[in-house]
Image (cartoon, rainbow, N blue to C red):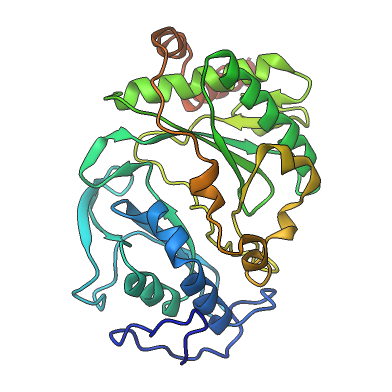
Length: 319
């Protein structure tokens, strides 16, 4: 296979079945995936470097699946880190996608989506960004997510903070807030909850922090649960969805004039040129106000709220 990026391909990676369809509905081949990731490697790798990585792979004719633990046949030159996975109660060997050959090896494995952690392998006790995931009620309600993103931006501005924004590559929007200092995981999670609550208060007719879907009343869910060791799809990552949309960085002033379908495996490069908007538009790390952290600690986590509410409703039904 010849590289379309003008660079020699890593000799350690053998590419196979490049002209097979990527998955049903993709309207793209595995070659398209490899060539896209090669072309954006200089932009996506900084978002992946030194972060334990989960990927979503899809084999032709099969359901997509998330892979956390690297397979036994992983090349020795793929760097890994072993972490305890609380959900499965075992150690998992995560890949660190730190270089082009590792990225292209994953592409050849039909890894379409790239979900790095918010922490780095050497500092699992500190997130580098707060993330607000804006989830509209339906796929055709993207403009509601855009309006909610501006609510988050307003809430941040009131705190003297700034964030970068990107499409999720699905139906919503992600706001990333880079933070500095030595902020404990519990404090960064609290700050995220407080920002979400503030954004929802700006316009409660549009946005909500209700974790249970039946309580959202057609509003955008301002999801503050992407905290700690959680993962978020990386900027420039494709998604396993019809047409293979891409999670793409956008300037705040351009949000209203675009749609998620504008950025796909086949069109995203045309919007980039030689630029890296995710790096260019991201503000520098910021200190979190102490009062914001205190405010967040007074807000129960969404899952705890949902658990108590679920129990209360169950008791009411039994009564």
